Length: 394
Image (cartoon, rainbow, N blue to C red; front, side, top):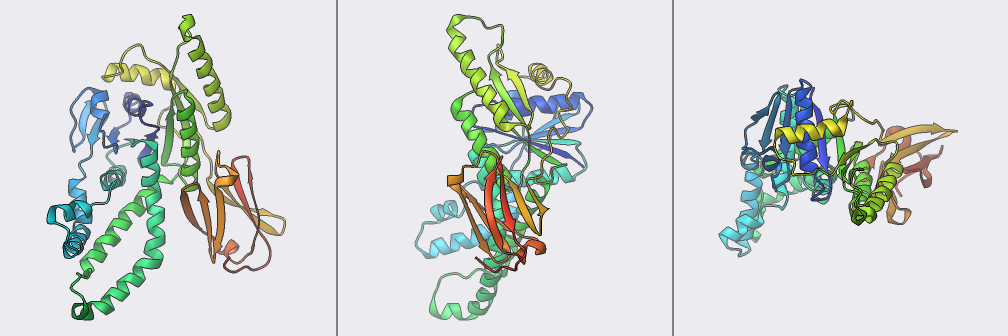
């Protein structure tokens, strides 16, 4: 059973360096380690100082690195769907080349790259799979997609499929617009199942953890706080925060005095805000961290006596507790603001929106039969009370 570590953070904070250093540290401990990138920038090869391609390449003892080539997965899963969308756009008068380009949803490369994690982690070839993710905004959109598609596939997709089957024989009489064939629907199901496997694997707290990389800067810390909120909303677990590029204590030049004070202030805020999640520290290096020796030394300083592959913090993003004659559903939403939080009820589902992101939580039968009572946001957790009386849709 592979351990999976995902590193993300605002662009430029050093997440690729941290991911590569963690991989080398795991390999030095004797763990068969694969480090791969879902970041379109593919800076992993630059950090390791070697060329990479779509096949795992040995880069150090017990360490392999890979830049996923999504072309094969794209043709396998999206080919039929793209073909149909191209036909529709051609029917609408869009030129062939433009139609092919428009039939590709932005971000698909990242999606298929992320689905490669399932194949690697399930292959039995690796003890640890380390993922250098895209910057946080892209990562959040990516990880939220399986939840969004679940709602569509469970409610809209079956109806659309049945209606199309009924209308297809008659559609040619009233319109020349192409109708989707069964192959298109089958490809859609395969696409959804691939993403569902990704989410199932990455929300298993014993197998997968997200590690946030931050710099001691106000904007970077603010984005990390939002990222932690949105990850918890979708059930992903953060087990560590890496505070990177801290000014070393030996830097005593008065010119850096304001910078050191600012770093100390932001680091204190990170320690306090993310507690009890551990905050690991990494000093600003005196030179570029490129190549195995520099990265391994960086990893040794970062983790010290810690096992980099261990689960460094455990928390349950969603749980149900008994309280008096009723129940309370507790969802971890660190740093969530009351003003950006919206709740709704639709039969057996609790609808939770935080900022631009929304999740539909399918309630267990014990709660689905009960009316929603008060809801509070306390100590980084949303608490929703369910009473003793039956409740319908709201």
